[in-house]
Length: 525
Image (cartoon, rainbow, N blue to C red; front, side, top):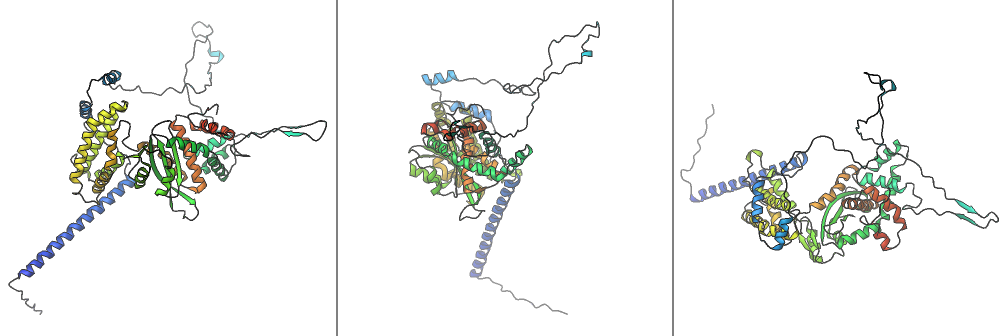
């Protein structure tokens, strides 16, 4: 039998022991709070990553109280009756109520060539069943179908005629070879344009293009196609240089960048990230430019923006390199409200659906920024002067409300949380974000350049990487030509065919100027 020994406990606790116990309790409570906060942050990050991988990518939000907003904006819009304001009022157009669109097929393009296929009754059936008279044609029931003729591969055999003197053997002449963008090239200008638009406009890798050609008898290796693409990308450099001159002369320039992988780059591993920089203008003939660089640092950005005029307006996201470009060049730097809004959407989505409400802090920021965009949508077709008055009266009040909400909660939220990151990003970008209020022509965001860079990103999913630095530079030049042609409402294939035919003949700056998308005579493709 076991006998438990009695444990004697002190009947009194000293003040020192009590203070130590209280301090230990407080330390444990503090450690528990820290552990709980770290757990909540980790769960928030995990859910954000899960949404990034599996959830829809759209950032669209419902336009709550849209009619109320329109009334509010119109009430705060300028109401002065100066002659200019009266003219604008007279020129405004009332929008009719919504009407349901008629359902059914759209008519086929009238410009498409038509081939008539007649369907006639047999001779034996062209007799009236009542009186036996022969039926006469009185019209036709017409229906149309789209017909596609597959690609045709043919060979152009060039005969350079030779001439000789019939009396002596001293005079022999041969008709000169036509100037070509690739001397002794295997593909015609049309074939090269077809290959290039297939890859850079429609995202089809060259090995698939080679496989498609084999279906029609064109047995070419993808390496042959790639070599031609690189050589053409180098040949169009003078046109790219002129496009850059036009871009740098613009009053408004957008900037952005995205990643690209180059397998064979001296001194770098194949897995190393490289970058494709995108630039576009907001004034003058539209220009969209891409440029390859092995990094994302300031040394690469400085080359792209060298020669920009002081006083030019630069729109970009919050990447720090653009701040340096703006300061060094004396530029007016605008911040992007889309990038400011995006972290709040991410923080809003991290809240469980059951706990979400319109009073959540992230939702309040999203809703207020949405007011700025609905004001811009209302003023989309207004003159810059009228839009500036709306920004001064209405948007400035919304911005003040956003600022007050930001300053109130900036230091009340954990900086490492999604909401804390959103607040600190907004605070850091604030001076650039509010500059749009000073002009009726400055944009709110860098969405246009993100839209311009999207075709490159979509194509990258198919061809994945560039093999060499030369291939990356060629891709940048050819993407620039195609996206600039599209921005000028020119069909890229027709533009490239005309460019490839005329480029070998260009000798002066005026000749190259005539090859820019808004100057070139397209002719027949």
